[in-house]
Image (cartoon, rainbow, N blue to C red; front, top):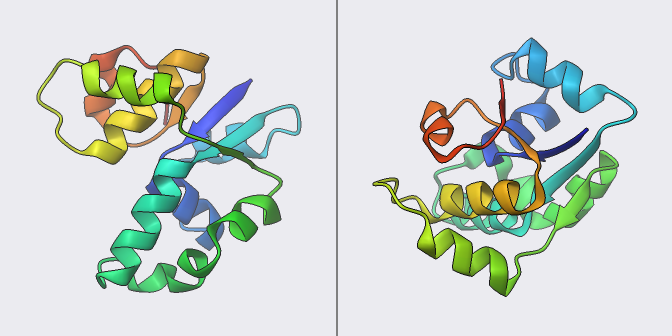
Length: 128
């Protein structure tokens, strides 16, 4: 199985936060699972930490790639195809970070670990 973590899922995993569902924790911890963290999440963490919206994530924001690799997760770059698919998604969901994660999950056939039920409207396999 291959998974893409939503930004909150990644941060909750790092913090051992119980808000991360048991099903998500089990799926992420499964040795055969390949786990990805998008460049969109790095962008979101860094931007929100800078603005004071994620005060608990300043250490992660200082080096997101190290945080990703410390968990043996894989970084997922944003391609032109991802950007085009994200921009073309229908629906009212305006969050650009979420739209990119949806596009990346759909394009690559990844399960998306997120508590965002709105993602279900886009046909992603949401793990929660």
